[in-house]
Image 1 (cartoon, rainbow over the protein chains, first blue to last red):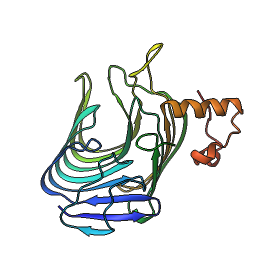
Image 2 (cartoon, helix red, strand yellow):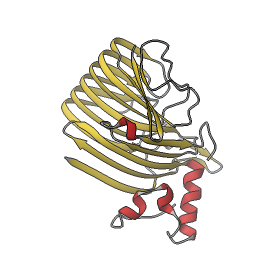
Image 3 (cartoon, helix red, strand yellow):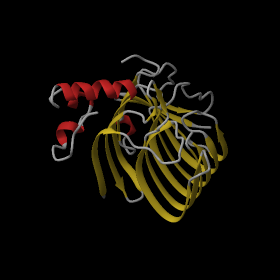
Length: 131
Length: 133
């Protein structure tokens, strides 16, 4: 699977482009897609596991911590489970959002324009890092 | 271009009959067929065609000394879409203890605390209702 890494102004942005059947077990983007999709994971810039900017074809592990935001666009069949609901789509789906557990005390900021990922600003504290 | 801008203070929202344990601030556009059912299988929906939504779900599952309560959330959202695609998403959010402390500071200072330091929309949208809790 190919991923594109962008070190944005104040964010770490990873785009992945899975085609075919993809089973996702990440806590922030759990689900299954049959078709094609573009999935963008926006992390706090201080995330621990970073790849160099640019394209990566192999060894493309995403950071273990949850993304500040996930923006996914898919065409085909997609099933997702977000902890609250099971969702299924046939066709085109454009979904972007943030989530937090009910027990969390976090402060989160996001400034995101899909067409300009390099300008993304994202930050979260209270989860892995103190405010 | 459709522009949706909202400033929400001390939102406490819940879905009746849903045991959601996650807070969501989500934009979703669907063209085709979309169906969903909540974890309890007590609610669901089916969309055929086109649908776009922007919504916040705050869980009502926080355990406190007084029992189960809704999650405390301070949120400021700005969303822009171009056609069926998202073109901008700005979010400032505080949850749980952080939201309570922040709301308390606002109440103590009669809203004159440096709210815009975290919530950029606080000063931008003077015409929207503001509050703390």
